[in-house]
Length: 318
Length: 315
Image (cartoon, rainbow over all chains, first blue to last red; front, side, top):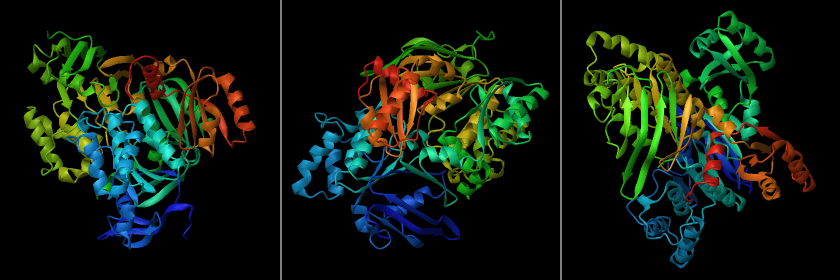
């Protein structure tokens, strides 16, 4: 199993809190240089998994290796070899840019003979040269998040964990941030991303969806869109939308119906067969039908399709 | 002043400055009854300031706001009666149960005891929370807390709802529930103004205003907005996205190229013409790819195109 190409290896990883199984024997292998996305509803086991991978929580059974170290037996070494960034929590807003960098260099024990070079590198990477003395809290969102990334990788960790790194940031800054991440990945850094944000998930080479403690889907974003969806997706323009949804809940072969802006999204088994049926069904119920077409599911459609609303609510609040 | 309004919410040249920054810059739009209108833009675009001015808790420097026919500055009490404002952090009492929180807000809003039970049962049902009435608010998940906040904000049947990023940090499943409630309210004639930093969420609104640095970039339906881009968008699927990018980034006709997890997202001048050109380029460099196909532009494409072609944006 120790494969030099994998920098995160998870085998039968299990975590129980009392009787509650938070993470249920999951398996994953993440390649060096991969940008890997980890998705799941609140309470599905996402944070518990991350805490174990960061060496902050001991597994009940099974094992996980991060950057070659066992998270259960060598949590200290794991922590020295990872970087962690969450846009919301990692920076001190009332410190200057340079003070935040020095603080993190100290926390990560960057050796003093490398300190200068690493600080220079971080400023360069974050494109913050000349801005060292600005108060962090006054920086625009995009700058802040690049600074947070710079701080998280001062000690050159081979694996970094990002938690919704670009939520709320403007799209141009977000694209620049992901460019940086892709560059790091090209240089061999493994990037583990957790997010609720499907726009971020699209940047990942592969995605895993965890639900009730188990991995329920794994693949590239396009594989998931093609294969994981239970059924096909139709966009239906009709009037009035409200009663159309009600009527369609009981229509044969319609697995799900939801309002989406000025139209409906229907999940059906077979789009080609369903289009004329839906048309007729709605007309029979005196609903005016406009345009109907088959559309490509988004990652969000896949996510929702793989996790049922009702069950997940119960699960995550149990 | 109490006559039936044309629009449930009217913002007219609203402007607000803070030291060193013009947060909202002559912003005008209106929202009809039964409409879900999205204020969409990144952090710092002016969304929260706009909502605060409309809610009557921050006076504008210039311009007027009216809600349900009341001028918010001149008649704040009249407006408040018909309005519900849910800030980013709605004040739930974590050590009270779901029911107790609702009762507390119903008291604040002066909801009659006789109406209270029916209303809260109906709202909790719609929110999928009927079985959690006795649970402490502090023990709810993030998505459920947001839904409870909405339920509390709705106890007095407002005609206008102002929501500040209600789905931030909420997982997609709960987000969908949340939107289902909004659509139901809209169908009852409530005017809903909601802000979001998620550009993909804009697609769920009937109309959206795209904000950038306090100014209105565009205001239209999502479908019309996408048609405005006037460019083709190509999705390249490849097992080696990095090499595909290296081959294509200097090709002719590209206005933006984004490396995604398993391919590229490229905005081009002419999709039909560029597809065969890109295919030829990748083939001659022996870069593996599955497909190059034209896809519908996203609101993000429009935003990036508008901002990078015109305004000054600091990176």
